Image 1 (tube, helix red, strand yellow):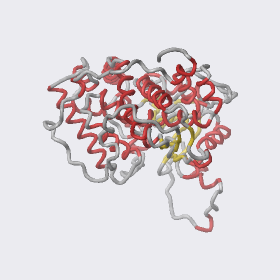
Image 2: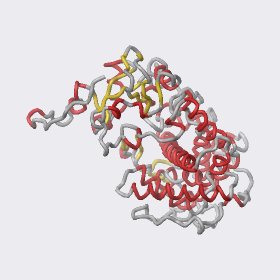
Image 3: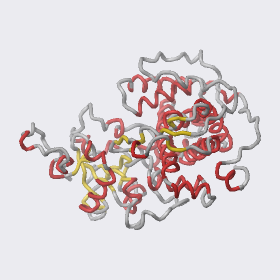
Image 4: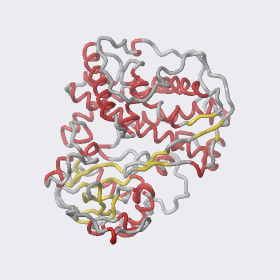
Length: 481
């Protein structure tokens, strides 16, 4: 691979004019995967790279560090399913070995090794992953949906009477974390603050470090409390698992579960709602009863995966992939969005793929996302509640006014303004605690573990109404969802 070049101050006379394709080029003529040129049109960049190099392309990351971007669907599966050739252990990266990664590199949060299941292989991976999967499998799926329904109703009650809402800021960005705090066994009062702190981390504000401290501190207090008073929750199951995870390992995995489930589910909800509101054929397939919402979610995961790129895999030795010479210690990125539109498997992108789960949105192989069914349940149930409560939900601005923000890893819809017929709240219950509170913007004083209330898991979840008819079921007469 091309090694990182020694950069000197460029001659202004040689600087390409704005809009010139050369802006996206780095040392050796390789294209940068980061920066405004790359991030303004990632799918266009992937098409160019595929035309130039085929299914595996050399690109540059921050600091012009050379890596491989896997664009082909088959090649992505080969990387993800062959841990003997491609490891998840970032300590193998030759850039670390050669001291090419500066201490302030923006890549470090994504590539720094941690003692969690996604960063290890072999027997250690099996030990940690079994603890996670066994704990997730103990969740009552109907209980998960009850939590989603309850919080979705509370969030909708906040704006149902206004006739308008930004369903990203007021719904999609808040629902997953409120649900996950319950599944982890946290006091309900922690939910809104953790929502704010996690959003702060996602948006990389100047208070992100404070928010990170709050999240980790809260998780540590939770683990200490659950070690003394276990319950029916993920934290307690991890602590009691036969794998005998240390408290630090449990905290690290809780942090992983929270961050991974939150970001991906927010994007899945947002992109599905965007598709429903802007694609008449998509909405017609749902309202006409041809497809269920759960099947339709897979179409969104093909066309708008929550992550454009998944990092990272590292070559365990010299090898070859799609004719490219991969050297020991090279980093490979899985181009999820690129692989999902690989012409070798999708020659006609207009052909629907409802219910087809061969997409790369949740990776594959031994490191395939273990919590994907929970994310689907949160997205499916939350969207169904929203569209059932507000059946005439429609876009509140011209589609051309919608704005996206991108990084090399993901693409986010900034806002999704909507309008609908104003309705009364479903109940007179108080708003979700902290819903209108300011985002984390100042140091958070860690709470004493002895002052926190008992987990709501100690009380049964109230179900005081008849089963709800789903949005598509109500339109098609298919019964109760």
